[in-house]
Image (cartoon, rainbow, N blue to C red):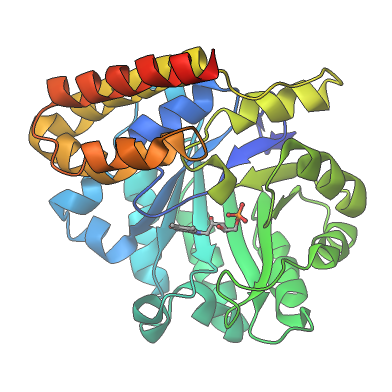
Length: 324
Ligand SMILES: Cc1cc2nc3c(=O)[nH]c(=O)nc-3n(C[C@H](O)[C@H](O)[C@H](O)COP(=O)(O)O)c2cc1C
């Protein structure tokens, strides 16, 4: 799959997820074979005001490239200036958020609120397209009406404005993450535009990737929640795509991955912040494994990186025994 001049080595894309798809997590996804990783949504307003926390979200390294940076906002001029900043910081692809259903974002006219205002979308995309030379994508939802007419209209506007690929998560604003993603809308949009279409929503297993491709004809498949705590899903999907049997992640691979994750967290956030974040995120990596709740209990008061490594190694020593 190609997004303008950027060739992706396979169709698998990591979804942007606030608080989750930071650089350490993106590196794990990449190592597992994901072709394109995406930052969490970055505030255009924060970028143009040079807010330190916002700028930090653009940190990257060559191992994760190509990188897609997603921005959100409602004002076309602000978005265009933010696009220039994103390009100047070295992003390979710029994505515009047209799907966030969070109240605070909608209240400001951004995210999925934009899908109610196609004229504004047109102006915004035109301004952003003019402001940047890197490939431009949009990620949207069904919109506000379950019929999908807003998504169809916005997809066509996006193509007309020079957008290079469209991701569609076919749930309405009101659905947030409930109900079922309506994959038929992915197929409908694919049949209407000639730029690549990336399908998203409810990929839970590698088999779902094949099913979505078959049912919708989408060019790329974006995976979100199923990769949280399980970045290895990308290598399993690749095995299935290449018609090889895939196996569940063995404890040894998982342990090595978690230890690398801890190292990346330390390098990226520094010990104090990394430890606080590991208290809540490490548990996700052992979901479904034996005695995982005991492990989660053991990390709620982590004080140092060394302690995090020790707790993980201890847990896996017992886990291996349990598996044997
Ligand atoms: C915790 C969390 C944070 C998210 N943050 C973003 C975001 O920053 N930008 C965005 O476009 N979508 C965001 N999403 C939506 C996902 O990118 C994706 O569209 C959605 O989870 C459906 O895909 P899935 O079923 O594979 O999880 C987020 C989802 C979750 C669960």
